[in-house]
Image (cartoon, rainbow, N blue to C red; front, top):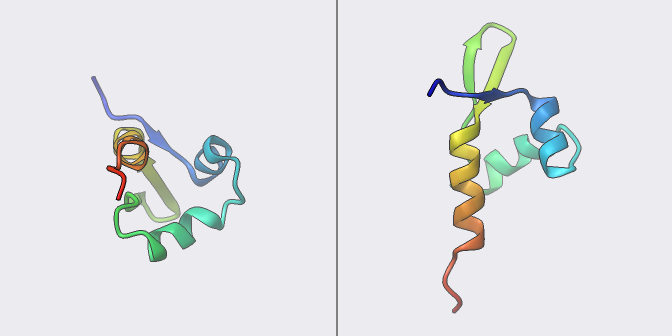
Length: 63
């Protein structure tokens, strides 16, 4: 299956945040997926990496 990429607007909509928030997450959360630069002015995030990050946030052990 080919990779699916999300734009910053799609990413912001997915998490119901402002489009600047994912850039802050990159700086503050070392586990947040890094964007992929497909061409100048075209930055995207791999959906599979975002889903893995989401899963890691929900399956953290207590303590």
